[in-house]
Length: 236
Ligand SMILES: O=c1ccn([C@@H]2O[C@H](COP(=O)(O)O)[C@@H](O)[C@H]2O)c(=O)[nH]1
Image 1 (cartoon, protein in one colour):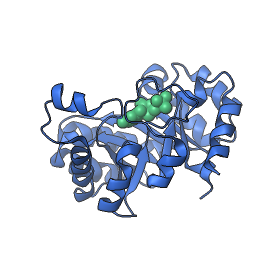
Image 2 (image 1 turned 30 degrees about the vertical axis):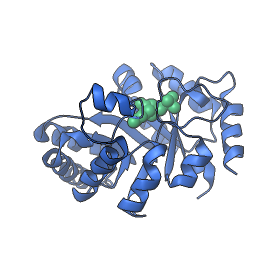
Image 3 (image 1 turned 180 degrees about the vertical axis):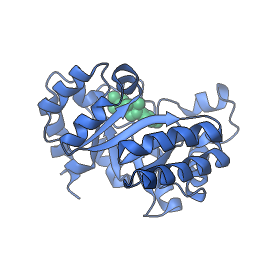
């Protein structure tokens, strides 16, 4: 796959108008992520707009709830015909299984392909100190991220969301057919912001990421077109 097609741009804006302006500005982007900010602000209409433009869609709603509730949310999300959908691994196995089953059934009911359900391992905005002292998790961070990815794999999910700093280890342990999607990606020239476990796009791909999720380094750049082009060049 061409390196450009391995970039998923995060459409983190607060209105459909702003989202459309970015789509118009960046027609070369083939894969977009719709997350909580845009979905909660403007509803599912943006998904239809992306479909009309033949874009691939990562619907990053990060479900986190009891089995019955995540199953209902996945069954409902199946109708949007998106490519990727997220849930937190910390929901536990029962919820992950229920979500996967409901997604498959929901997609079959509307005669659409099932989105790939991928699990958040540990948010890339957290570091090892926070894991230990805020969340009180008594595991080293790489071990915890791997455990969360394996939970998703054992439950039959298609992949995981992880930091590029853990992707090499997850790739080795989870195999080549397990999808690994990495946010927390920062070119050297971009501001790190709230991302605590970041790597450059080139290093993240080299370490084994299937897809890179990049938002602000492109969308908040003074010239998003130039920023996207610069990242693509750096990947060559
Ligand atoms: O662990 C995670 C899971 C999801 N995200 C999402 O990715 C993008 C990253 O945006 P940047 O502007 O490049 O930081 C954003 O939509 C997050 O919600 C993540 O960062 N980390």
